[in-house]
Length: 395
Image 1 (cartoon, rainbow, N blue to C red):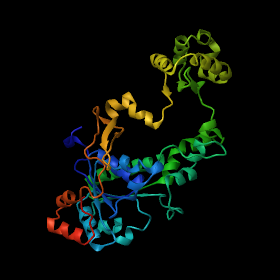
Image 2 (image 1 turned 120 degrees about the vertical axis):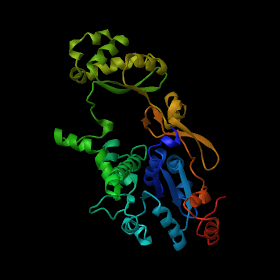
Image 3 (image 1 turned 180 degrees about the vertical axis):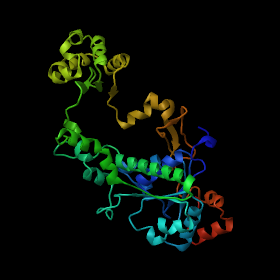
Image 4 (image 1 turned 90 degrees about the vertical axis):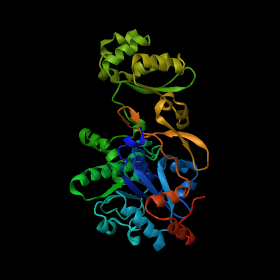
């Protein structure tokens, strides 16, 4: 998709955030075409230096942005941010409650001079008894029941991705886009808040509804009784595992014929899913035996021909070589350390086109002078800020 056709190409965003939820909100807007200026501390965002499971946070959630490293404890640094915000449509922040208010960068203060500003605050909790508390993705998963539903009954386990940070960011973007649309009519901005705990509650809402409808507390997904007769992971001849689901009666008959299970295909007691569900002890061992005679590749080829939902049990690193993702869904990205990798694009198509890469994840202060000049700062003003130690210059 060309830069001129990007839907948010005329939207300017100032992002004051770190870790995942705030940057994920910013990167979605940036991928959609918004001009996003990321404000970092003088030493750079600490997220850049995380190890272990946090090592991928910065490169994944900060492409298509520009970076400034500023001292927000100085009046000169604050004035730079205020100048940028005065020209912006949106501010994104995920500081602890009250931190930006102490600097005069809260919505109430900024909106007095800029009533059209949309201010998105990303927090642990929305309004209520918990709103003063700090939260993390994992805290929200534990409190909101998602870790219980993911793990075993006596061993809650967080999901294998920062799903609440990312989904909370998506809700933040939805709120921002709704506020932008309303501003077309009213001319006024909005204070938008998205939060981790309420995001988790929304995601487990299906299980709350299940409890209300069935009258029974839902067990963790790891031990749940599936609604389908065949909805399982099976082992192929080479030891590899494949998930297979048969979710319609038409699929069941075709599946049986394709895999030499004519006895099952012709058994009226198995024609409906309810019958297959009741006779799982009979059909699953037979299916497992057939699958165990085929290699993973042969099994998946036959399943594809049958038209069944199926999936190999991949690891994240397997996706680098996935042919479908490599066709359109991976972006070639240069990391701040100079290395190159492929990372997933925004999972949206418009008129069959995907959203691509305009800028690699920025180096620390990598866009300082160009960004400030575009905002109206002259060379002398920029040099003075650098000399004062308020602004980190490009290296």
